[in-house]
Amino acid sequence: MLLHNGKLPGALTKRPNTSFTNSLLASARERVPRLRWEATEVALRDFLIDQKKLGITCTKYRTAHANGWSFPPLAECRKAWERMYGPMRWDNPAREWGMGKGRT
Image (tube, rainbow, N blue to C red; front, side, top):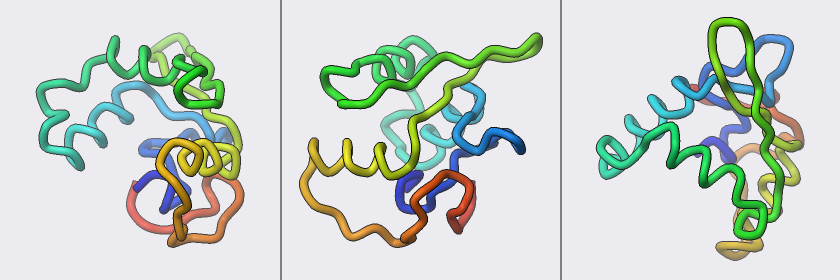
């Protein structure tokens, strides 16, 4: 749903392609019941750094009070999804993070 909406949960105001790890995990646990027990910081990291599988590079983002992740442009993330799972009709035509609709 993140790719459909074009918004990351708890995205930073000046960096709409960046979200803190705790926001990403809370959203995943809320939206996908089986992830309530399987989603951990390590599992999220392992998924986001698997460039061979994803076809994109997510980078670590750190501040003095929290860690997070910066994502490539939304259009690149959607293309990576389509390479993995096939063509998709996106609900929101936005090409960049933060231009989306819906809840975070």
